[in-house]
Amino acid sequence: MANPTTLTLDDISLLLVWTAIAVYALGFLAYATDLSRRSASTVTPHRMPVLAGSRTGPATGPSPEDDPHSTAAASDRLASDKASRYVWARIGTTLTTLGFVLHLGGTLARGVAADRVPWANMYEFALTGTLLIVAVYLAVLRRYDLRFLGAFLIGMVVLLLGGAALSFYVEVTPLMDPLKSVWLVIHVFVASLATALFAIACGLSVTQLLQSRRERHTAPTRRQIAPLEPSVAARKRSYLDTLPPADTLEALAYRFAIVGFVAWTFTLIAGAIWANDSWGRYWGFDTKEVWTFVIWVLYAGYIHARATKGWRGVRSAWLSIVGFAAVLFNFTVVNMFFKGLHSYSGLS
Image (tube, rainbow, N blue to C red; front, side, top):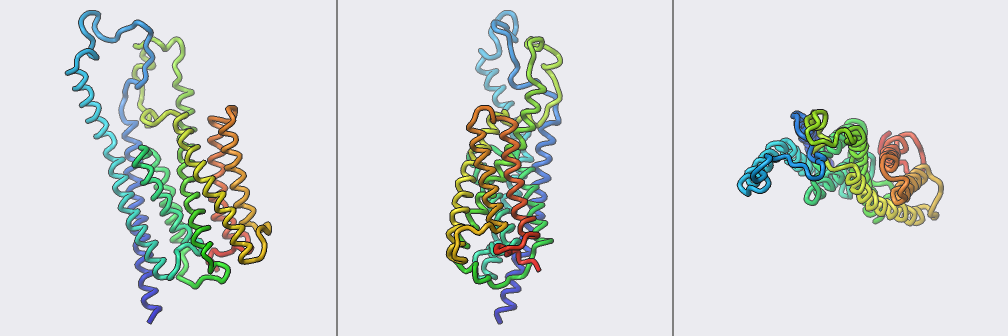
């Protein structure tokens, strides 16, 4: 009598996961539309250099800034413009939240069906890992407006979760003996959380590279200091004009990487303790162990380089991106093609 119940719960879980993927895809489209609409108009740059002592208002009489009614009207127009401009970002966030609820339901249903935590094989790890990426993203939105990362992060979730559902899905199976430990709950969950933080850091680093390139190409020269220079006063808006400057994006990426690095350090230590409990040694140069350490070294190098003045900017951003690429390599290629004591992909 247990099998039909288990299969039913697993079927419900899979249905919820595919529904979540569809909703995430709609959220990705909404976020992508938001980015395209941000670059749809021609505007004057926000921070226009003005010569000292110059005035942009009439030669006589009060300037518009001195008129409180004019200032209030301008503020109302700005608020209205911002609200209409970011409507697609709000739609994307709403769809992402709905997708997260469905995703969470599918993950919980898988755990109930398996009667254990749902991260014992590649499919379940992808299920939980992508859930935490969305959870961290939605939580961070309460403090930072990172909706410009929505297209990158939610698009990545659609690809990872959809690929896992297509290629890594396996039916519920009992745990292998080495996995029957409390460290399965702690070690893998913290690793998933670190992966989510590294994903957001990577998205910020990619955006930082784009913003750095734009800032280099649009930096005003001495000839362009005059406030009415035609080549600067009006130009095609890029969505990057609405994003924070490159140094702010770099600082945010660094913060997320720091927290992710702490979590990954705990993952490495917990894994060593678990290995000693299961196999009687803390370290054995298993492929998975080696790549976990390689990732730790990459992010330690990134944090050290970022703290050194000469390695800020573009070079540190690339280190962040390479670090997350190593995380994805560790999850996919190492799990699928390298055999060892950590071969728990669940794939035949």
